[in-house]
Image 1 (cartoon, rainbow, N blue to C red):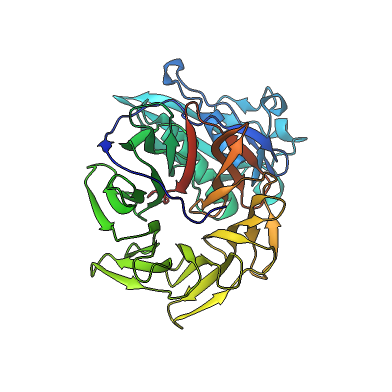
Image 2 (cartoon, helix red, strand yellow; image 1 turned 60 degrees about the horizontal axis):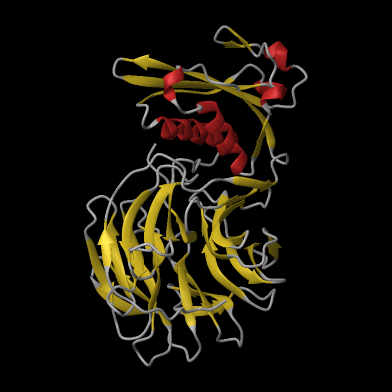
Length: 430
């Protein structure tokens, strides 16, 4: 795996267009029977809705790795008695809880309503969650993801991340603007182009409020780091120095953007741009390569990849002590660290029988999450439950998802072009 890619440059087109179809088709490859059992009953809904709300909810819960929804054939035919759950029908069911609901017209909009009811032990018959909210037909998938978020949070105690969006780069050979920066729902629906260019675009990273992206573009014949507003399309160049300008990473507190620059002495080092003071600050100064900076969840430290120990490993710079320490020792090469929110663990790319996604726990042990051999660019869901990354699938570069416990795995091949450099966006407000 190369730290840096030399690419030539020029030209771009800003654009915005919306498609409701899934640009990334999820193909499950493993782990669907290992989570907690839950029954997601078909929602009562008008035929013109177009979105199978229960199907979206079931798929969301399964992809988290925490749940294994029952197949429809396992749900009792008499599961409901009118609008009430028939508890007796679930007496022999392995499910610990059931989700059921309805979608119904309400003036010019629709109401999406659901209940989560316990089926076992002290929770049997207890309404664990109830929600009703308005939605249009156009936003019905988001409404279904909202149901998933609430179910997930009530059963795990952690926020759901199913209404989040991802950013990624699509390369379409032979098109006038082959390089495209896209955003989409985490499951590949509602894809929106942010930027189209004749020249490479790399390594997008989200602002913590979800309103902007920072990325690298080669349109100026040198790699340039831009901040771009998702809605207005306005953008600002913050780094266009001689040499390398790469790997921007937005801090969780929103005040800084870390990056790799080589303009001082020609050797790649870690810097950050202070958005409030509008100034650049150098973090590392080492004869070896320091690259791929990424923030700790509290914004008080930076993880980065360095060759200062003789081979690529993960190091941590603590802003309190102003010192760097090595944090990975297992495996001959570890790259591309990402902190898992809510824990002290990291996601890394490790070189063990190929480049694979792995989780490094607080004790330094590394747990392999994938079995592929050309994985790169991992990004962690903001609730820590899932990891999206770039890999090679059936001879093409595409995206894949693995739960952070390794239980669920799926490929997300693109319907057109090769896809890389995924970045998971922040949680949305409830």
